[in-house]
Image (cartoon, rainbow, N blue to C red; front, side, top):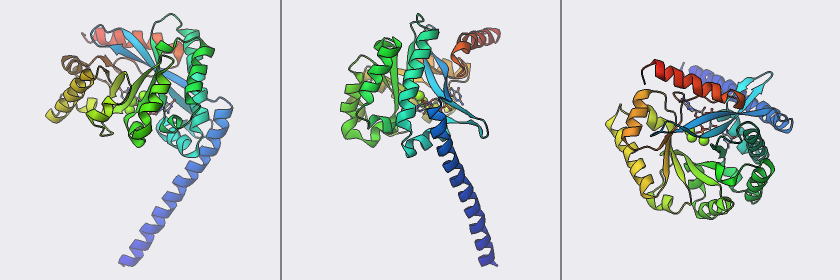
Length: 284
Ligand code: C2E
Ligand code: MG
Ligand code: MG
Ligand code: MG
């Protein structure tokens, strides 16, 4: 009996695994075509300065709407792009496109533009040229571009990360460590990274004010970042309570659905106004 069950379970697992592998292969194939045809597009999410409530930056986030598969999340297609090596092309093209789009729509906003880079792109010796090219061809001042790199990407290649970051920063762009708190870096390692800001991972923000542990962790991250002269951004802020807690803990900036969802660039100002009105109506 057990053997039969085991066999059956194995067969089910097999079918599921095969389906997942087939989807991976299909998506990889389609992603190649979509990237070449320019079918990936970006949405933009505001980042506010907590003390003043003013927008200081927007983060560009890639979207892929496939005619057959529907909306494919970047959480699914970015890893596929990384494994297949497509990320270098996709990343370079995205950087160029979003810089241009940003300058076309918001040239005088004074806001910064944040763009995500993946670990694989850091290995590319051409990356500093790609960044310079995106800046010069769009007219975006280098000082208004911020590149986000996840803490875990930096930890993958600790020995080289410092030099790579220093080169990237040469034209005057700033660097942010993304998803901070999930990669277990030490203060000493962080000190060696030439960066400008640190983004506290959404998983901590979600539990803020709920567990003492989380509050202590977040407060330590903020203290440590300030010691290193880094600005602190909280990601995934969804409630007024979270925002108030973050303000009390001295967090500098915030990003999240409470302040604006990621939207196409021409819908950005409407989305910001919608959130302001909603918060005002709620008494904040
Ligand atoms: P990330 O860079 O940490 O971006 C923040 C993610 O959190 C985004 O998910 C955003 O939509 C989501 N988010 C923001 N505020 C809230 C909130 O209040 N609540 C919730 N539940 N979620 C919130 P998204 O757009 O699905 O992107 C997922 C990840 O995919 C990004 O995480 C980033 O690592 C990666 N990604 C997106 N675009 C690019 C890109 O152009 N290049 C690279 N290398 N990675 C990208
Ligand atoms: Mg990011
Ligand atoms: Mg992040
Ligand atoms: Mg994140």
